[in-house]
Every structure is written in C-alpha cells, then in structure tokens.
Length: 122
Image 1 (cartoon, rainbow, N blue to C red):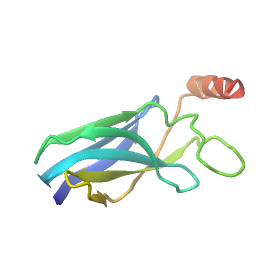
Image 2: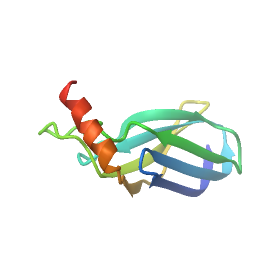
Image 3: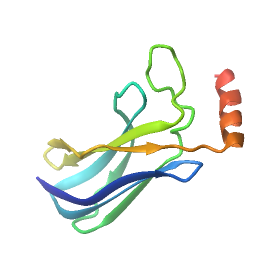
Image 4: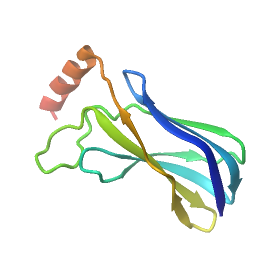
C-alpha cells in the first residue's frame, strides 16, 4: 500500500466540522475511515469515504461533533476542540493512519443552547 496525502485538514463552519484531504498517490486503497477524538484523546469511528484513486480531493462533513459524549469519566459533553485522523484501509485489509489534525469547533450560541436542551432529554 502506498498513500501520500497532499493535505489533510479539519475546519468548523459553525454548524459542523468539515474534514478534507487530497491524495497525491493512492495505491490499493479501498476506503478512508474518519475518526474523531474529544478531550479524552480516544479516537472513535465517525464515517467512511470510498477511495477514488490518486490525485483526488475528499471531504467528509461531521454533523455530529457537537453534543457527542467524548468518553471522559465525568460524562461531560465535548464542546470545542476535536482531533481527527484517517484510518486508511487497503484491499488486503491492511491499515495505516494519517497524521492527526485538530480543530476548534465554534458553535453558534443558539445551536449550543439547543444542543444542551436536547442532551437533557437523552
């Protein structure tokens, strides 16, 4: 397996987090699993994007970052800082990981309040 990423980034648009990357070289790659970590620094699966071939741009929108429990022992909700990485899966089931990137998720006050209200009823 050979994968070279031209770039890998995550950015908040106020409602969700958009994870973007582009491969320069991509050999035998079947899919990219997007993983997210909260304040507990434990990466968890959030979605899969099928591989398209070398020199292709990719994007994954994480609409569920706000309000997700981050795995910390106090049961708090992760609110601001998330780390993302790619789990790169090949046809023969070998796995490699990309570097990780961090993003501050600036959620609007209205969405933050609504998210907290919804959490109370879960």
